[in-house]
Length: 100
Image 1 (cartoon, rainbow, N blue to C red):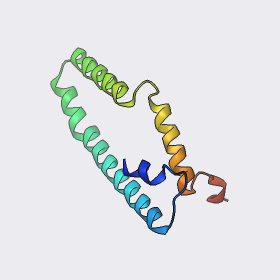
Image 2: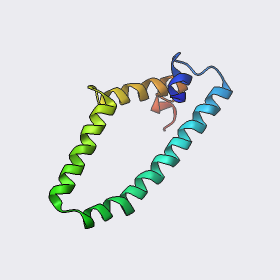
Image 3: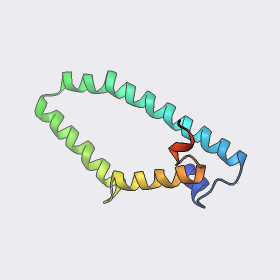
Image 4: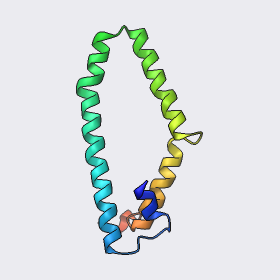
């Protein structure tokens, strides 16, 4: 991922890299927000209307299996570790700096 490449050294090297990281994270947020809204308002309601409850349980199980395969054995914990490293590299890890 470009975000991990930018932050793998543990420190953002300059303003242009910080600008690129900001653009990448904003783009990701915009994409995931639109995607989640589409799933929640269109896709999943239609699936629940069309499929019997037992079939939806199977679909949900398949989603969970896919998530486990994608994330590996560490699951969300690994993503949180990566996010911590990204925040550290970007200098945004200490919330006390940004709050009163």
